[in-house]
Amino acid sequence: MFKNYITIAIRNLARHKAYTFINIIGLAIGLTCSTLIFLYLQHEFSYNRHHSKADRIYKILHAQRQSNGNVRYQFAAQGPIAPALAEEFPEIERATRFMHRDNVYVGIEGKEHLKGTTMVADREFFNVFDFPLIEGNVQTGLQTPFSIFVTQSFAKKLFGDTSPIGKTVSVQSKFFDEIYTVTGILQDIPETSVWELSPDLITTTVPLKSAERMKEVWENWQGWGPRHVGLTYSYALLKQGESVSATAEKLPDFVKRHLGNDIAQTDHYELMPLTQ
Image (cartoon, rainbow, N blue to C red):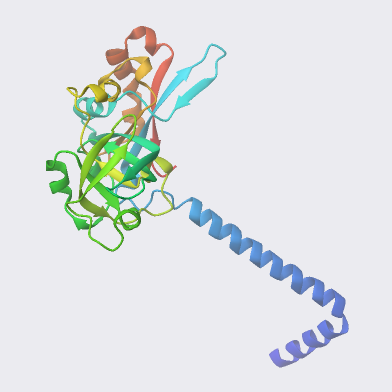
């Protein structure tokens, strides 16, 4: 019986060639579009999910209510927020902060400088995010003054096939202009990573207060004032099982303690999931 159904279907398709052609083309286009949409959505929803703790990591947003009632968001906030949250909120396991600069010039002696993105982070950074090393050691980098981690592809641009471990690179930046020693090679960062978490180089050398050229960086790293908003990105890692909504409810009092009641009337912080 099934064979008869197939025979009848083929005869009908052959009898109505134009109709058959239109239906087949329509079906092919529909399947193609559906597949492309699925792949696009799969790509978009995979952002930042390569971090093993991604479901517990939250970005700290600074929000300010304008005179017209609209809320203005800044993705960076005051530098001291991360360590203060880690100290005052028992539900926060760790918190980290970093500065990210694009289009800085990086080079080695005798070679033209390349443009790259550079990050200066605190020592909690590698405890919150996953940035696997293919050569070197994170602890060595943390203990070595003015050390730097370089991604595999950027290291190849600078040093070719030669191992860069122990070699120096110069970074020309307004905020962390210095000579750094390479102590680790980072695995190339997946393309499904947001801009601020996709640097070519990472240093955990916290800005030095005694260095005059680092004065502005230090002020932004330590200052609570409104003018210090805009350079430092902060992220918090919640403990397993902790409620983000319950944590967020405590933020208004946190703002009052550190910024004062007047600023708390217009400014507040929000926690945005890393995977959002």
